[in-house]
Image (cartoon, rainbow, N blue to C red; front, side, top):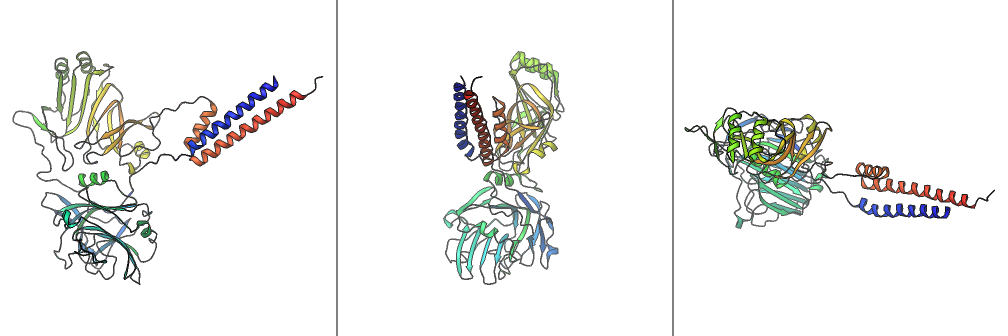
Length: 554
């Protein structure tokens, strides 16, 4: 009997060791990485003022670099910092803590005056980041509205347009690398549009540099110049981050001639979707003139054209419905009882009563409710189907505050996720599934994937509602059976999962906690310590059993 017990203990130990051997490679597998948006460092605000925490104006005429309001022929008005041309007026970025070598982005709105007031048209510098040594060696990254017809270092032809340029020189006469991101002449190389507001974004990710114009990819190329090498010199005295002038001392006439607004630098490469969203939203201070939207007011027949107002360039869908100051609940209840589809609009949200939901449930019909602003533009929509109503006794307050606030959500979701908070006045379960459409066109670009979470006030955690949303014509549409304070993000939140974890014993619960709260290496080490302890206990038990079994009988 004791020998059998010893065998059972030994088998148990073998099983523990086998499980550990299986678990080790699983734990050793790299955890999926969470990609976040790069962190922005603001240099020039959307009001055309300098962000003194990150940069400072410099030069003899810096008093001319004041906020200036400028309209263009497209009806866009922005306020930007005024750069009057020449290297004597510029902005120097004093904050270099964002430069970590993993990648780079520069974004901003530009109003270029071209050659007006400047004796230098080619190679004006919007920004120029880098250094030049006393021997002439240099490493720089910069953007110019118009490059020369020939490469300035190699003499090669086929360059005659705006471009994002990178070069490294071992000395004044030796070129290590020289890359220029620009369309070729066969593709229609051109200067940046002058006399109009243009959104420019330059990114570096690994060996790829890209240039975006008005939110669309303009050109991209593999580069031999390393951003990380440039960053490694950021503490050198000759390292400069300039806006509006060249890093080369000899380039005395290459200062930018125009306005800059809403300028930011980033510690990584922004995605195409993020850049498109910036350009589409227009940034702070943009007003869209005639042609920027097609909303109309109340017509003579008492109806209004409720037109979604997506970002610039998006197609709008027109729906003609009668707009009331508030929803007429008795009329709605009567309509859903007899009409297959009821669509109504009001400028003030209301609370739907149980009578409406009972009528919906009994008829199986559908109800769509548009809430519009004072210009009769659609803000959000609720749609209920009678087939989805499961508890007609509930009432629903329709009010939604878009782009709202919630301190608890803000603490859980960093700005890297580009959060957009929705405050629902209705808290808790709905009478059944509802389809909700909200306008977010000023925040995200069309086709931008989004993720939706709801804040649980009891657990003080975020729970997923939908992980496959896409912006369409400036709107996001989702289904939900409960409402409260919600948040949209551009990527899945770290630590929030749909998976349900089950445990079978105290030991498995402990191991689960270890795996979830430590990195893989630490988890593996702790797992093997637990296994070793169990082995020691098992061996001790076997020894005791053997001693007991050999003890002479009295």
